[in-house]
Image (cartoon, rainbow, N blue to C red; front, side):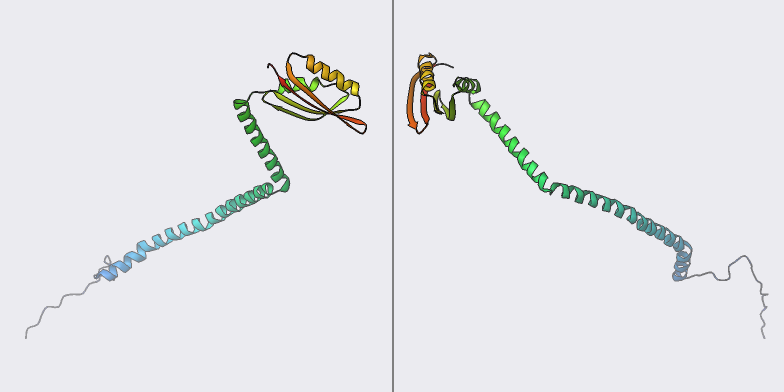
Length: 183
């Protein structure tokens, strides 16, 4: 009989006891060695996002509170009234600018006309259109009306001066119309 020589069995302490040879075993070992560090990294990222959420929520709450405060200020009734008032002022100033550009300014003429009315005559209404003046006056003194009529008719700056005098109880109503000759 043939006997084979027995090889002596030895133990090698340098080689691992288990050394995988198939791909699944190698993948499992890789995941347990490298995957734990990936898992720790992902957990650190998740914790960072979790704690940053507190900071971002605080900023969001502060911003929301500030917006609500400003909204409450703007919805205040006095603010609405002031906004409407200043909006009207702005519209008025825009209209004045348009009028100033397209129309002659007659404030000095009107001021002269009104200041020329004697103090005993009371001005009820005033109209000035294209150099034509209409005045509605009241007085208690007929003498004052006559003096004013004479002054207007003798003034070379006015032409076509007409007076319409109506006696009403104790007052005298006077309607005056005339045209300005020069500006």
